[in-house]
Each structure stands twice: as C-alpha cells, then as structure tokens.
Length: 533
Image 1 (cartoon, rainbow, N blue to C red):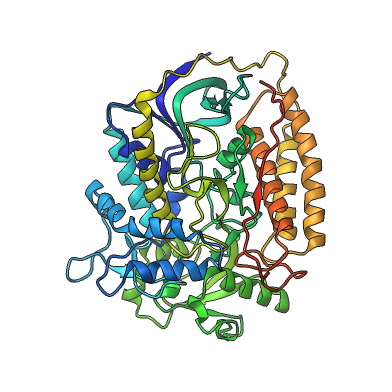
Image 2 (image 1 turned 60 degrees about the vertical axis):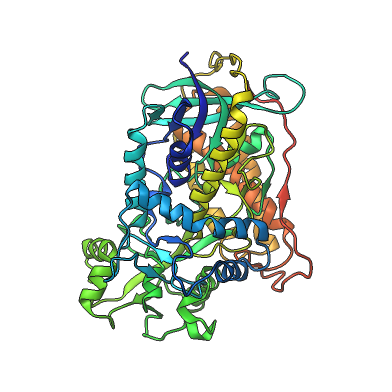
C-alpha cells in the first residue's frame, strides 16, 4: 500500500486550503489533496466577493457591528474582531498573489454592498470573484516546489493515536485516502493535518454548492473525537436560478446590492412587507420571505428584476450571470430571473480556537468546515471568504511555531480490505442519497417543527444502520464515502436543531417562534466508539 509522508497534510483545495499551503514555510513538505480537480471547490463558484474594511469612510467597528447584528446575538465577539482586524492584510496578500480585482475609474478597487452591510466593503472580480481567487492561488501553489498537489483523492478517515490504541492525548497522525482513479486506499502520514473540505449543503435537495460539499471534514473530525457546534444554522441563499437545466447556479446578492427587486408573478415587490431593509435584509429574512410567499401562493419561484438598470451597466457588473442566463434563454437586461432559495452555507462546524486548532492535537479545521464563532446564527454576506484567508493564515502561524518540536508520525496500520467484496447493488447508495436529501429539505429546511425534526431523525437513524452494514461489507467508493459522511452530518444538523428551542437567525421553528432569553451555542460532543480499523 502506498505510504506518503509529509509535514503538513491539507485536505481540500479551496481558498482556505490553498492559503494555508502558500503561507507555510517553503522548507516544509506539504500535500494538498483535492477530491476531484483542484478548482472543484465552493470557492471557485463564489460570485460576490470578500468583505473587508478598505474605504476611509468605513471602519473596523462598523464591520464588527454589522456582523454582530447579522449573527443575531450568537457571534463570538473575539472571533469577529480578530477576523475583521485582519481583513485588510488578507486582501493585500491576495493582491500580491496576483488576484485581479475589479477597479473603479480611479484605479482603486471597486467596492460593492450586500445584505447586512452598512457600507460598500465587498471587493470583487466582476461577478466571478471565486474563480479569480481560485485560479490565481492554484497557479501560485503549482509554483511551490515543496507542495505536492494530488487530485482525485477522497479522504476516508483520520488516523489518530486514540484509534491506534494509544493512551494519553488524542493526536492526529494522518489519514486514509481513496485514490479514486486507481481504487487504491493510500496512507498519508503527517505531523499536522488541516481539514479544509468545505460545508455540507449537499445534505439538501436544492443547493448552490458543487457536488463535493458533502461534509467530509466535519464527519471525519467528529469520528476522530472533535466537538461540533451550531450545525442547525444552514444558510439558504435566497436567489438560486430556477430552471430545469440549471443545476445549482447562484444569482449573487450583489445584484440586489446594485438595485435589483424581488417580485411576485403579478409584479408586486414583496420584501418591503417583511423588512424595512427590503431586498437588502440579511439572507435568513429574505429566504424565509420567499419561502413564505411560495407556500402561500403555491408558486414554484419568485422573480429577481434588474431590468430598470441600463443594459450596459448590467452586462459590465454581472457578465457571468448575463451569459449564463442567456444560455437558458433569459435576457436579464429585458426579463426577470426566476429564483428560489437553496442550501448555500454551513454556519456551524468543527469547533476551533483563534488558531484554527480543534479538540484533537495537531488537527486544524479551516474555512466552512470550521466553527470559529464568526457567523453566529446567520453568516453575513462575503464574510466567509474572509474567514478562509484569516484563519488559514492563523493556522499557518500556529503550525510554524510548533513543528520543530514534533517527531515524524509512526508507521500506521494499512487499510484492511480483506473481508470486503465488490458491491452488487450500487442503486442502494443512489436511493439512500436521494431519500436523505429529500427529507432534509422537507423536514429540516427553511421552516422547521419538532414533529418534522423527529421524523427526520428517525429516518436518518435507519439510513445510518443501512450504510454501516454496507460500509462494513463492501469495497469502498467515492459515493459510499460521501453518503456515509452526509448521513452523519445530517444527524448532527438535526440534533443541534432539536437542542435549539427558539427561532434565531437561520433556525426558524413554528413551535418556538420567539427568541429565547438566554444565549447558547448548540454543542455536540462525540462518544468515540471502535472503528473498523
């Protein structure tokens, strides 16, 4: 069996993982694993931009205040302050890497505004910021002789001292990883491991996320002994293109920031009825308003209308969206865009400190995989990419300070596939995947009830038993790994939601429509059981 040895193993090739790789000392041996291709990460599809204080009329205090308001009382103030204070430095670093942000007439970065922000502070590259960041950072990492980039590698589980039978502090030693091109399970040993695998929005039937967003890092960290928190706060982006041929195309919030209106089929603007900020209210309010109107009227979508703006303005500000909609026969300079809410961002995740360190020694979680406390009960627009850069840089600094004192990780037990056989009915995986995503959408979606959550938990427990039996007896595959992780993460979402007996931010339940007097995070602690290794 192939045995790889590195100083730092980074699982995930989005903004967080690539930033960490670039910020580590060039003398370190680093591996970056990508589940598919290097650019197949949520970062690549991000349209809006990165929030940071870059204008003299703006301030750190204002960005902090906006974030705290959007987070509905649950943001950790130290995490918010830390992120916002380090924002301008992160942007300067991105510019130094060569990211081509859109400039204004004065050759300064053009800043736009999105929901929840009191000022224009979103730096962007037209309406394809993620693509600009991803392609630039991938290119920079390719130039690093100390970084090994490995595609088509699907992490299965973390290797820890606890799982290896050692006593004392639980320490990470590496990971078992499926090479999906060859079918071989490889061992990756490392002094440090960083989970940068993104969120878990593929738990839901409708999502803006790419297919890789199956909660792998959260599930692996949980199985390794890490606590998770606030998994009930799933952000549903209000405006995903509604078209039978459009799989998961997001219509950026920046379009509403530039004056687009949300309308019902009869043309009525409905957002002013729900919030004085109308279309620029935070995402949870906008998504819930759309969901309410769709259910009230029995309609399949609502409409986003920017046709009152000049055609040249629309094409220059939103070229990517203009071209994409045109492919589906929608000219956004003349026609309204049909939109629906879709699962977009996982606000909870693996609990970390300000250095991105988890409960397991030498294991880090960065980006959407982590719970830093920044987002509270609702992520404010464009704070997520900022979190990726700031906390990846913090992780790099922490690793750098510790690495000299660490020995090489010991040899790990090879993956045992001696008792498994090739599956004869892969249709079971497909069926379970579809069942999971449907009941999560119906029962654990934008509006919840105790009864819906109980039904979802009952179904997820049945699926878990089926999948455990399947996982124990059949050869491993990417689909099986992802389904196993999604079912576990869905259970964590449901159990966190059941803990929260109030409606706050992204968690809205008809049984408890009011805010609770006491503030608390929904924290789950794993009870480690024996694994198959």
